[in-house]
Amino acid sequence: MAVGIFDSGLGGLTVLDAVEKRLPDVPFVYLADSAHAPYGVRTADDIFDLTCAAATRLFDAGCDLVILACNTASAAALRRMQEAWIPQDKRVLGVFVPLIEAMTERQWGDNSPPREVAVKHVALFATPATVASRAFQRELAFRAIGVDVEAQACGGVVDAIEEGDMILAEALVRSHVDALKRKMPDPDAAILGCTHYPLMQSHFQDALGPDVRVFSQASLVADSLADYLTRHPDMLGTGKSDFLTTGDARRVSDRATQFLRRRITFQSA
Ligand code: DGL
Picture 1 (spheres, rainbow, N blue to C red):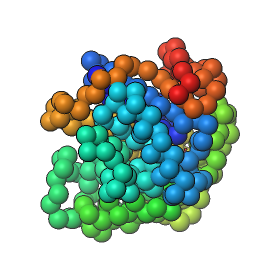
Picture 2: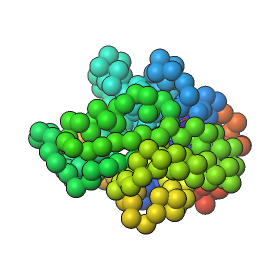
Picture 3: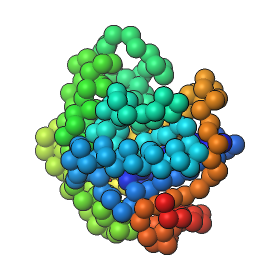
């Protein structure tokens, strides 16, 4: 049995780390499409094709359930995949909805009409493709009214993290937070809408200031996956725990080891 976790690169490891801690008995197959990262500068069609290919690879590895631990794929491809592509006996879930449910104080799957919530001014930090999709605003509008969202496309941050250049990543985070603050001087909440960004969470918090509540996905996704598996234990699949990459396995293993602070060995996908 195994559940598939997919990201364009290393960002999904932030989600993997949280789901492994929450569900220690569940094996996971992690797939990083490192050869095609970053996705955030690609077209929606391109992201759709790459995400379908990645999900197919994880189905082939014995995963019946695949989590897109990538906001860009969740925002640009998931709806289209759910409408017309996913085979009947498989499931593909994204990482957007658990975050929006937490921000709008909803329980899992609460589909009641949109209502006023505590947060009023929300800063969204995400990749250019996620921002362009407006998926966050669309999902939020189903659940909340009166929330002002200002989105900042954080060009370059994913590339810097994938290259292991954390000094550049930090400088870019600070300049993107400054740019956001010029448009929205006093956000009361910030969404890290890319699974790479929790690796820079302290820098976002520092640049935003202590009064801004920063939401990131890892633990929220872990809780909703635990809830999903309790209700659908048949979706555990047949695969075995593994780390797969379409890129240079040695290089990706070294970076992953650095981020998770334990030895991670990727195989070629
Ligand atoms: N971790 C992906 C996300 O959550 C990164 C996207 C990219 O490859 O640009 O959006």
